[in-house]
Length: 191
Image 1 (cartoon, rainbow, N blue to C red):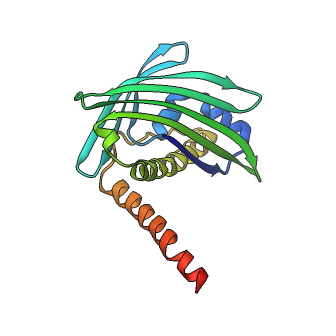
Image 2: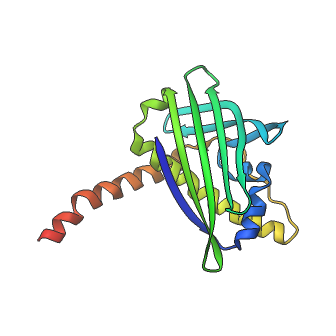
């Protein structure tokens, strides 16, 4: 499943690119992600926990930077993991590309996600909505981290699973808006 999101950061491209070079800080910005070890050669062990309603999925696995294009400001990460209770597997290739956007930076993120097991039972729409919510939180956390680094401060990221009621509600609202636009906006246009 291919999922695309983009967001803007009110920082110059070079500063955002420099931030993307510090993988532990990048991972700390993603709700539910935790790096547990550096395996060397741009490879890391870690966990990702996501809660969608009453279901909590926690994957343990690895993430490896497979491409880092300094000139094009593009990074590719391959992540793979198994659900810790044996309920499934996930493989994902994440590509982030940075481009100037006014005085800031646009970050385009594409995720090629393959799920098996319990996580695969959720529909594409729900997974896309949860991913969009996580990307919004990631971008906000990243902006906070970069601004804090400029001031010489460090900000601790919140540990624990991403999700729970807040992400579920936000994803459900996105789905409702999508349904509303699909069914009611075309009707109004033809009236």
